[in-house]
Image (tube, rainbow, N blue to C red):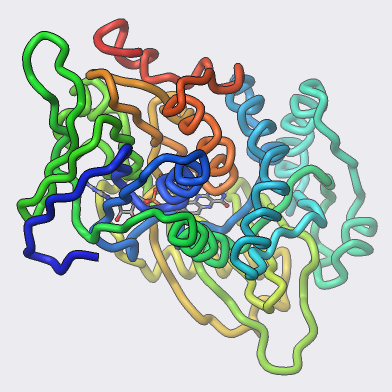
Length: 393
Ligand SMILES: Cc1cc2nc3c(=O)[nH]c(=O)nc-3n(C[C@H](O)[C@H](O)[C@H](O)COP(=O)(O)OP(=O)(O)OC[C@H]3O[C@@H](n4cnc5c(N)ncnc54)[C@H](O)[C@@H]3O)c2cc1C
């Protein structure tokens, strides 16, 4: 890895800007496909990928009017287990994939009515959902409050330990030969002239990396890279999420088996258990630009709602509070495909489902990089929908 401040004269088949789960998954699979890959990222510390809850939840995330997004999320879920298994095999590290399912619970009758409306829609899309009364919910999760009105079990929604997963991706990418440059990509460079093909990237510290193919996968920062078509740069926006990491005190048995998604008087909260005793409680959804502060109000609200449905939460240790920026788009869908000059691809805008979609996104982008067509489910999510014919490929 070159030291900061040193001009690099690196060349590669492909440069990937951004080392969250999206960029790193692409880097790993591209290297496995035989490409010489350089991944550029100044520091992965602020990546949403390290903040996320790790739910793999196409079913409980499915909303009215988002049929195409549901289809690509289902594709992503189907791909995840084999991708994770290969990752575990290559690295020798477990990534914490849990398939116990997700229990959505409603705190009062109004919350239950809303849950039933969504459940009817999800069933109409062919998704599995089992309605449970309060007692049956507590049979599944004995620490749930008796005040819980009722719930629905979504067996098709799983979770992964996103930090273990991200670490395994980095390790697998390194083992596959991916080189990492610790610097920010400021611009995609083109050859100029009539064909205007990509010739590499410029770095913040002053160097360049030469490559005929560039993938911008910089999450909520993707719009800051010059050379990405202007119409696309304004499309991705940061959507702040605050989240808590709790831990069981020594000797305390696990308080949860399933992921719990609760609606408490109209407010949504989730609790995601990990095998190592961590419980994730999330998350806010705020339009505050690049703000990564953690506020007392958010911590209070998340804990209050979590304790309403799972009172034993109060006995867990508050180990960490954090905030991350989801890469949001106007239609809540990812932006994956060729854009602008020949040789430029983007893979961003994964919003609430970037962990879930990482493996399938890597497949789609590597297909593009190697001259194959991505799966049909990706067709609605090309950059062209925002470019209106101005430079989409
Ligand atoms: C609170 C919260 C909870 C979430 N829960 C879930 C969940 O349960 N399930 C799920 O699937 N998703 C979840 N998400 C969403 C998920 O985290 C994101 O969709 C996903 O992490 C996006 O990955 P990414 O690699 O595109 O971006 P990021 O993880 O943000 O990574 C972007 C990387 O690009 C780098 N970078 C920035 N600018 C440049 C540049 N110019 N050049 C080079 N590198 C650059 C950054 O340093 C960073 O490392 C959650 C997000 C949040 C915030």
